Length: 330
Ligand SMILES: NC(=O)C1=CN([C@@H]2O[C@H](COP(=O)(O)OP(=O)(O)OC[C@H]3O[C@@H](n4cnc5c(N)ncnc54)[C@H](O)[C@@H]3O)[C@@H](O)[C@H]2O)C=CC1
Ligand SMILES: O=C(CO)COP(=O)(O)O
Image 1 (cartoon, rainbow, N blue to C red):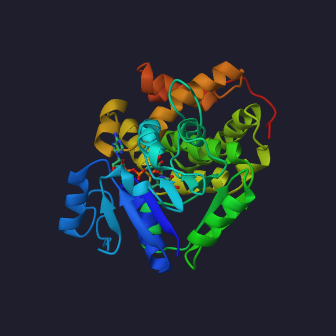
Image 2 (cartoon, rainbow, N blue to C red; image 1 turned 90 degrees about the vertical axis):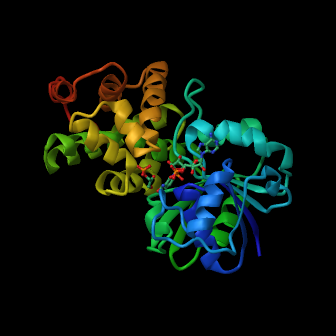
């Protein structure tokens, strides 16, 4: 039996807790910064806003006391990117060397432009960092819909530990040692999902979406390569796999926010209405990173213009369509 602490009682943190509980072999505790969120979950028996209709068993312990981290075997971050550093700081005093630390958040830190596992490692120096990522909507993980993800780590034993302890009939976990590639793929696919949503909102068709997805993964891979990732990683579950699930599903908050923007709602209001829209924050960070590294990312550049400079969505698409015609770079 592993003692697992999950930081974050939002959709993904809870879905992992429910799934770990189904394995029947773990002692699972979920931490939230907000006691009111825990009280709501307990009084309704479910998280009404994030995972309606999915029961949260009383056997999953819930607390707002961060000292719950002490003595666990596996510490899982299920925290939106903007708050990861603060939560890592809170948890750090209770972490010891034997713990495996897992990041499931998808984003880049604004300003530093670091991946989230890099942010966590700055606050919690560890040799046992694992990134768990891939096509895995919380709404389906929590309902035991068969799902495949990747445990990525430079530490093979730590990745294998996560594979063994979290893997079950519904969750198949592959290993990968390209941590950078897996994290960049997971973070940047949200940018493309926002763009696909915008096309849906504008009433454009499947051709446009296929174009965005295909050219989108290429520009993500280009940035990843410049950061030292293996370009082949972007053909895998954390790259094209997660891009597909996010761009094609109405579970995706990035896609749903994009639809609102395409229908004429301002980006700020769309994010306000939908909730956690990681692509909104990641777009700015990815654009800054592309400029710092001199990597061409036309889709990200146009979305950045729409989100932060009041750019018009139709003109942004026009700018993409009217770029100089060229060979297909793959
Ligand atoms: N929902 C999904 O299907 C998946 C989400 N992820 C990633 O997991 C991360 C978390 O996403 P979700 O659980 O979906 O978010 P969510 O929107 O469902 O929940 C957000 C949670 O963050 C916590 N929170 C809010 N403000 C905070 C603060 N200042 N300090 C600490 N905690 C705070 C709250 O407990 C809140 O419930 C994101 O990076 C997301 O991209 C990854 C895979 C799938
Ligand atoms: O990352 C996800 C699925 O793998 C969830 O996507 P959204 O954050 O767009 O809901």
